[in-house]
Length: 288
Ligand code: SF4
Image 1 (cartoon, rainbow, N blue to C red):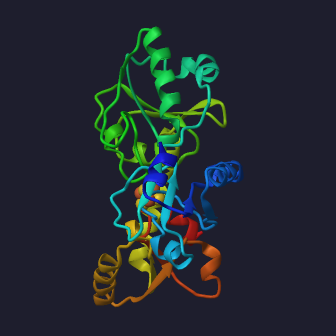
Image 2: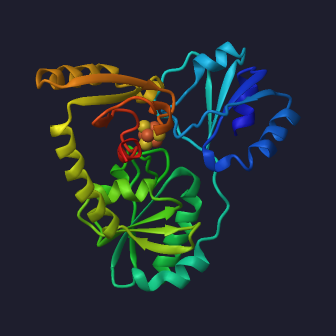
């Protein structure tokens, strides 16, 4: 339990990092932490994954431990102890899959995957599918069976199945998987309350990608984005790429961010932007 772990560390002031999806609950969580005797500092910079451990900021704010909520250890080294809290969302996927089952009914073997917060919901979907006579397969490459991260998707792409089904919200995780496999990929979207087929999205993306690649070939002035978050720091690769592009006669600028956003480069002019931050970020966010 994360509270026991924090107490065992003898931590007094805790720096709290959490995903955007937990913003509406974070004050409630903060109250619980305070009731348990901790002083807390809530990080209001976005934390998209455990690749982002803010030990430097936490130390500066005189915290003695970090609580990373809803993420699992990414292997990032930290100068402060980090406690990872497996925060699961309490959602019931059964009414949705009952209503939407016809989308995947034709498949005999279904591969399931989910992000950390939706692992319990995925287990409920597994039981439902098995009761309907489906063979369900999952793999364990992260802490939990079936768990993937945006940039670590082997638990999904390696599955021997007729189709793959994501349980969760948003396009980030299923979209990464559909780009890495030839199998049909669906998302049981718990927010939109429907099953979404990702094939069309994939086709749209591949067309855009070809256009972006051409744009980089034709570009004269190029930006390469890097990030100082520990698990996303690819500065060496960025300078290597810069050198290669300069050898092709291009002018290259390295842009460093905490969180990348188009607004931050208003006023600068580039023909193309190459993203070397989170590998799953859409480059088009900066190009369009
Ligand atoms: S690098 Fe991107 S996809 Fe990977 S854990 Fe960090 S935020 Fe998630």
